[in-house]
Image (cartoon, rainbow, N blue to C red):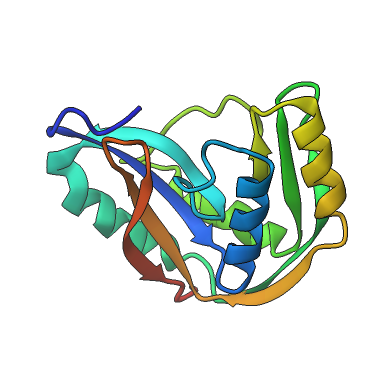
Length: 178
């Protein structure tokens, strides 16, 4: 969904992948012809696209301040690839360190006013190929098999989807821990 109705916004919340790792992952997504490569910055989803009222934005931001207070800054390590095939045509880079913190954040974020059902159980990952051909999925899976990145996560990001379907960062929320 896009933000074609000014009264409604499509919100997403994620751990943003920092540079230089983000450029490497975006480059791979472009290389295999994923049409979303330039619309979706590399990230670990905490809240998938969720429509909310534009009038609730202040309430959503207040909620995200509180959700970010549930977890202290942590180290995230990405290592190797995985896939959801055949259930979903997705190849991803695996989160190997920081899974528990992502799960805590996801539960804290996906509460009112951002309550929503998930189509699949939560599994932190970084999508690098989605809804492309089998050859492109295999290329991403094999090409990023040895990918490793480690970095500190000290905030989460709220994104808004624009009318062209691109995800734009709106605000960062520092992790302050309990």
